[in-house]
Length: 475
Ligand code: AMP
Ligand code: ZN
Image: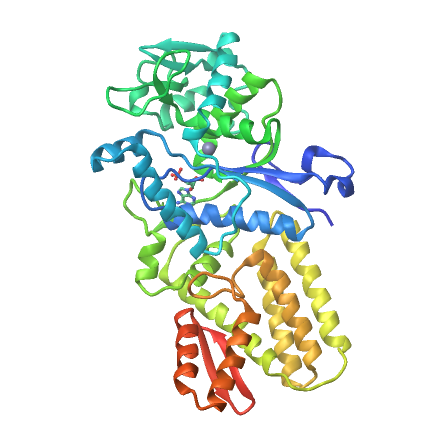
């Protein structure tokens, strides 16, 4: 079985081969190099943005599940028109302003159980790499200057437009352009470097003081971190044009080598049929949903379980369905932990587990077909419940099934997940339960209650039964 993912550049599903080593077994010793366009830190990210960030997380987790190593960067866009305007409005420095929203963004990532990646470059810390690209382009005669700003001349770069397949006439009509780029020779050209206005944050360059254009930031951070062609670049579909098209143009023109092998784009989260976006005002932040009493676990479940290349309509009904699905999983876990029968592992549980892992992997290997993967999970849950109903399951079988769920959860990140967003540390919880049992025996009820309340605050509910105390995760 090989992992294939759709490549926006070739319009085909293609195998992921890190470093393009033909021998996949040795290829696995190369890490898969990944760059994901990160947030512009001028405000709270909305859950449409988090659909894309959760996809990035799911992708890296699945690559690791399939035995690849990953070397993953996600940038922080901490200088652009919106961050500069926000800092001016709040009367703080650009750094103070963007640090506030960067911290909030990292808190939200943690809440959603999104793994840390290897690199979080900031645009403002990569100016040297931007200057390098622009200098190279200038030597090749692809850059021109107008009123202190530097532009990339698309007419000098013949290979423009391969990712989005847009004709120049379409480019003229529909695209997103910066309001302060009206001095260009050609409407398709884009600013590499912008002259700064008085009082604005600016950097010294060979061309005078100024600040970066948006597109150059990602090209520069990729070069600075990885030094050469990368395996995978991700982002939402709105970034295909012009952002990624411009990244390709300036990087390939500057360094004369392929910029990215595999482009992966995530479709939009919609609200009532329209893209969720700040400018339309039709958005929910993560915190809006938490304030309404929804759990980060259900939000994560909802956003990762629809296929990344399909648009997804956000509804509150969808969160309720996610709650119900999680409840089915949790109920099985509670039942598995209750098994008391001792016997060596039976063939049933083992073959069930093997079939499940095979089906899950086969589904996800086909362009990350999450619906197929979740279908396999719920069939597995159904079959495991049937084994319990027939009392055909021992403690060892139950443990085997729990271990398989843990393995799958290394990809999904929703099964062993508490309300506070931290992963469940079962050994620690069991240690506290044992301490609580001892405290009760010693009639230290204050300590016993304290333990129950502190676990409850983390979203862990205790239930005292004849067989002892068991715990489950609160919805
Ligand atoms: P931004 O902070 O605006 O640069 O966006 C961060 C990421 O979120 C980018 O990869 C966007 O393409 C993505 N994005 C923006 N809106 C949506 C949406 N409604 N659904 C999915 N992804 C989105
Ligand atoms: Zn980018």
